[in-house]
Image (cartoon, rainbow, N blue to C red; front, top):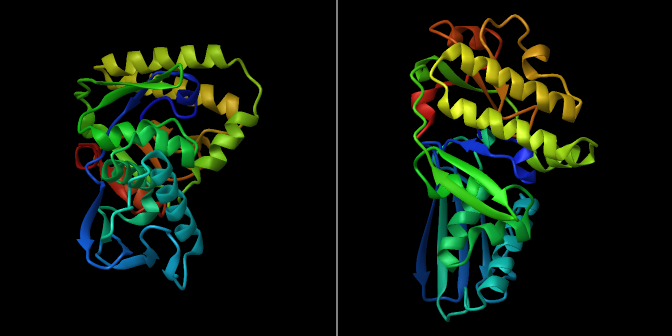
Length: 293
């Protein structure tokens, strides 16, 4: 999400950029009435697996570790059955394998892409499944379903999605930097919801910034809009901008992406950008054209 983090939940217009990296889910029917679940990371290593009774979703072989992941998975599957009672109710069982195309710690909407994939499997609305199991705006569900930049907005709790042409001439001066820690978006949402501010004023300002960024053809104008966006949310969240706390000497402009305090940032820069962040201990620096679909 390039613009609109947090405020998108209150109706602000957001510019979202689908990534090249995603998550694949494959389902194979089996003769036994069991659900074999296996999750692979980007190196094809198993990081979670379990076996359930396919109909009752009861443990046949509980995982030795990762009980929270098991609980989350069962919550999603049981909600999918509520929305589609015939889901998983046939006699045959299934082997399900998920594969991440990026390191788990990056985030990149791994939970939402899983929900989108399960929703497609169950033939149900992915937004409904998301909102019945997690919080959030649903923008990453939209990204999971599109391969082009898009505008996302909630109107009367309904997602409005429109693909747009966003191909800035300065894209070779944009970089995504991983901050070496994954931020829990639910914690960020709770912080945002706990603040008192003029919601309508914020959403209107963020929406205007989104519209201007979409039209931006000049890097300096783009950077000024990023700073305006950061300042607005810094005031609402009562948190300093990440550039102030971690990179005060950086010559370009830095914007938080998603929940503040972790995951990725966007940095404007040049050929020295990768070197700067690597010297600061941030080794994952991805050029725009290598990250965005």
